[in-house]
Length: 407
Figure 1 (cartoon, one colour):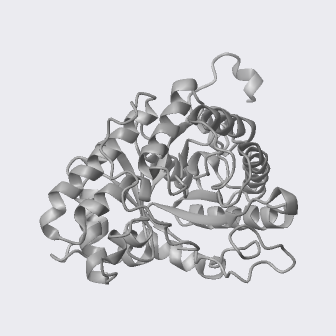
Figure 2: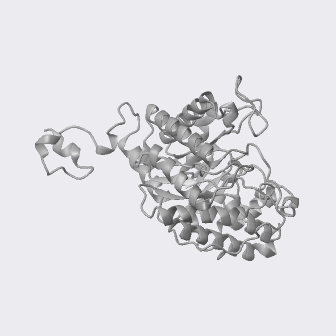
């Protein structure tokens, strides 16, 4: 039999083999040469779809040090950065009542994946028992010496390439065995239009690095989050970021295809298209239109979900509130999109929570309430219904520059 013989009676997915007499599913189309089995693809797709559930996003909880060091708050940074404090804070986050109404997945650092709370309960069990899916950050950061032959950008060092591919196979398998079902790898790219950054070399390096990571993850049962972050450092315009974002995403999806990555079992964590930290300020409407335009031009609709990072912001901007407003504006202007477009925020979900907690167990309840409120605000943003100022925030109080660099 052939497809033409079937006419209008093409059977549903999963029954094609019985009709045609050979093993083939529609999910395999376009993946000639893939070594994934149908069963592996079914599991990856189920996980990716669960992570892309309506109204839900990610809690990025994968900082190598205490999250309070990256919160950009003068008092919070004084909390002692000990393993005990990190475990106490994160177990408080993961046990927030009904957090799974807003959060589908929690991205963990390696320490946290294998950590227990004070009562001896595994962190991954706290997460799964609260209705969420645990994931793992797998990149090993980058060396600031950078890629030879590349120019120094706004971060103060040359363009970079992440480490960790040489040990990724073992780490991915171990993470799956520990209960993780998805992963994240962040590559950093810089913008400097005068110097031609990001360079073609840095983009190519990032694209193939992330594509190989994604393929290795899928082979080991983990849904890969692909994160090519174009950092906002610099004085460039939003238009320069738009051009760079389209170049970067086009290259990355080309590489994912070359590496036979199964898009239905893959997710994207991009930057929003925004002006540089010291560049001409763009409005939420401009950010929304240019961000969605870049995605429509570059991201195949086969990908189930896109989850924005919030990114560093100027000291006179409320990171939590701005990230929520920008996301909501996208859905207000574009109520129908081919992907689930949501959030994967760290500081932009946790800053008020951290400042409320301040290392004291007595503050756990209030800190959880602050986290839950901001997560609910972002669920409203995913639905395009967030009203600015309706979620309490620490605002600009105590704002300082967050710790920079790889984390």
